[in-house]
Each structure stands twice: as C-alpha cells, then as structure tokens.
Image (cartoon, rainbow, N blue to C red; front, top):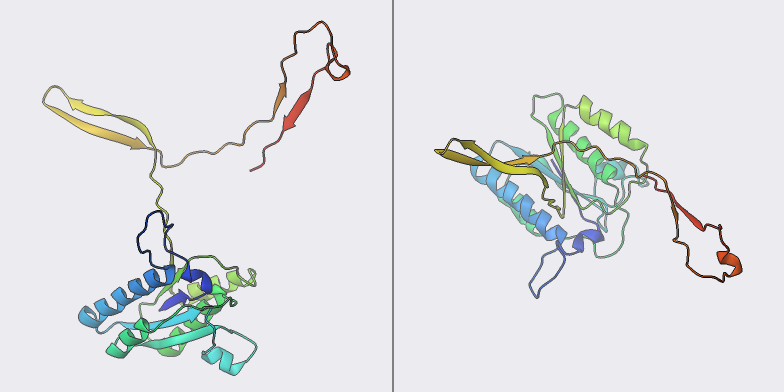
Length: 235
C-alpha cells in the first residue's frame, strides 16, 4: 500500500537550482518512484497487490468520507488494493499534486490506507507493507492520534516505511585516518568513523572587556568597574 503526499508543497523543486538546469518537483520524483514499483510488479511479481492513496488533494474520494462527510477530507483513493494492471500504471501517470493550499494530514492518509487493507485482507494471510512518501512540510492536525494509528499498524502486523523527499545526504567525518601495515608487504588504508557521538551543552561563561589604558576616565569606564555580559545556551 502506498500513501503519497499530494499537497501543494510537493510541487517545490526537488533540489535547489544552482545552475541553469531543469530540476523536477518533489511530486514528480515521488511519482517516478511509484512508477518503478508498479512496473516492476507488473513484469516480475504479478501476484503482488498494490493500492495507492493520496492525501492533500484538492478533492476527496474515499469510503470513510462517504460514511461521514466531515472526516478524512482531501484524501483520494487512486486505486484500492488489487493486482497490478496496465490501468494502474496509467492512473499513476495521471496523478497530479494540488495546485492550491489544502489541508494535508498524513494520519488521514494512513488511516484510509489501513481501512483499504483491512477490507482487502479480511483475516487472510498477507505480507502487509505500507509505504508513505512525503516531504514532511505539513503539520499533523491532531498529534494525539499518532499513538492510536501506531497501535493500529502494530495490531494489523503492517510493516511501515516512510520515504522523505528530498533526501539530504550528510557525509560523516572521520575520527582517524591511517594505514594498517603488515610489514613491508601490505598496507591497507583505514578510516575510522564515530558511530555515536555525545553532544554536550556549552557551559555558561563570564567575559569582561579589557580595561582601557588612560589617565582620564568617563563615568561608565571608572577604574575597577567591569562591564560583564552573560550568554546562556539552551539545547
């Protein structure tokens, strides 16, 4: 099951434009990834079933909203859980992100997706997987519901995977670089990286300015008077 963020924020460029090159949007990158998943299953894993739900859409189309008009708005079911077909591949190509600002609650999208999975599996033996693709640019309306949703995912034995776009890669810093030498016959370059690094809070400090060397003093610069500045750091 795939839950895709279709909010207007997903229309933002995938990366910062530093040169005059064409840069696709976050939504286009996510859609391209979904196309790859669908094509792979269409060719090699025809027994797998896929469903797609978009949240943050301009319209609303899902069963939970049909039962209650005031709930799960701006969530659209592109496809219920079913075997992959050519029609699904065409539906993926036609997907578009919202062009105006809309509410986009990832929990609403997940709940609608879980409902589709429950309706499809119905106590049958399935290897259930839920993939959420988002740029995490929108807030959750009711954070207190997160615990309830997590409990639902655990009870249904669903494997949750969250993919965030754009992905920021941070190169680790080496703690030590050297060679592991075996006499004169062999030398192996070795890079050592820290797996866990303790972050400490900067200590509070007092700093005083250097006194001016002068025979005459202004009232604020009288001998023996120290101007002190305090700087506090909070995590």
